[in-house]
Image 1 (cartoon, rainbow, N blue to C red):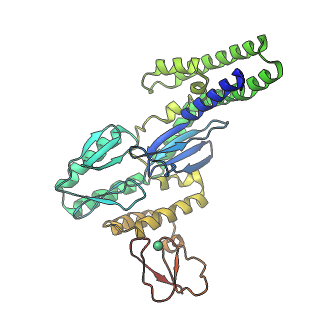
Image 2: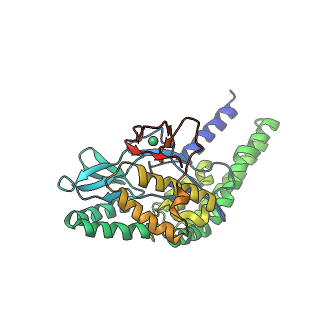
Image 3: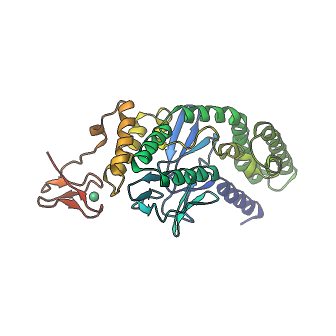
Length: 353
Ligand SMILES: [Zn+2]
């Protein structure tokens, strides 16, 4: 491998690291710009300290991203139910609950913690748990239901995204130009002309683009902490210059507590939203949980407001020959006589009609 190739490989690796985020296991990332958005979930096979990796869009045009999070703490009669990952929820008794914040992590009891999108969110969740601990179950449920509806509102999300898109518009455009210049123009020039004066000129142009990006960043990113140091990194390192807009998107939202992934209906389109709606309905309805009824109640109110009937969200699989019932959670099919799906922790089977 030549020096030029090694350098290019190093830049690609640094760029990918810059595009990677470690997120709470159940978070969703909205990625896109303008009217085109998609939702992506972190890669669950890798988990480190309660977080899973997620790679943002890496090829131009550069995009914005926004993190959403479903309900992670739900009050039950005996304690708080923790829905921090895709596994069976854990119950922490009210008596043993000692919530404590450690960065973005909220520790509920020894060996049981849940990760949030920001430290502020972790603190807010801690406050809520302290309040719930002193309340009656009816009060806790009412509080949860109002919080749930608040998290499903569309406008905080769309307003936030509009504002972000305006702030990052030119950072994204220039970031795309820097990407093309670094990974395409300079590579072609190097292959074509080799080490020479031309490549030095191309590098000088790149430096000029990075400095312009840094100046643009200083103007747009007033809310970003250590803005001047970050601008310096943008001026000197191409991977930081390409992804400068992300530093604004990474800021924790100030206007919304947290937004549920379902709130993104108008952004992701009806088809993707319905798929998501089925996913959340299935989890609420069928995952073994002490709070299933409360979760379903919250979702039913929301789906009714969205004009979608519950039966539209329940998928009936195509009946295979010899089967009489199916599991509404995993869609596995069973012969007559079976009543429960043991794979899903005892979900009651439904007969085919
Ligand atoms: Zn099942």
